[in-house]
Image 1: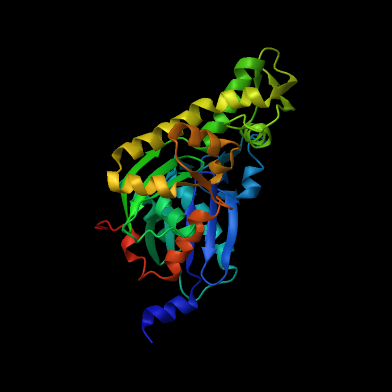
Image 2: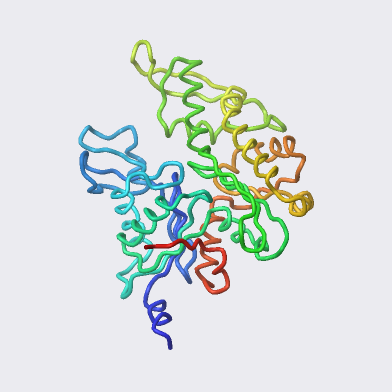
Length: 346
């Protein structure tokens, strides 16, 4: 038996969707074993992690001066290398669930337009966190494989993956990306748009988690079939500096979300303009597949259909498509060798 196969049997090889908002880990033979916020709480001025994941996220906006709560990824790439390594190390240890005899291999999903230095940062961080071999796949390719699209065929498959920090739009054929657009707009920008709107219209400051909760509760991209709703929002009065309560409507939040949603639409149209006519014809027949957490925004598929005149398909569980696709690649690296990024490591 080859040594590589023996190592594979002794290690918990994994696929990682290293997202700006959340990190998901798939372990070979076990499926998805971890889904945690990409957040780390550290001692201020150091990279020493005090809490990682959901525990760290619960500290956002509540931590004392000596604790800094950090999201080490921004716009889909690593911004704070040392803290990202701490986070990955913690997630890998949790995913393994036991002390492995051999360090694992990992397939890691990254934005489609990642540059060489950012890709190297991902590789180095993973290796320093305990990974033996690192394979890189783009998020839209992983998402397409995750939902079962025939990426190896000479037919056009279009995927929109809306994550926390980026939206990746790609047309895929013959195991490669033919046309793509990666924009730094995703769930985080939607949350920020909600927060700024409430600040402007209600003279009130709310936290990041509150903005996200409002978006999930009453946010939408299209009014079709959605009754106007109102919810109570709590924050701090910007004039008097004391706690304040206001009521916001779903119509108000939909208007606040219009700019980031329209930016995603513009990215889709740019990609379609770059798509060869033969593949564009396939997309007319097959439609566009929408994945990622942002795909859960109510009415987004309807709005996108109206703006592109193309069928839009939101998959059943858009949050897990990328990591499941990376997991399929991990399970058969030889079959999917062509979809992996190959850059000179020297």
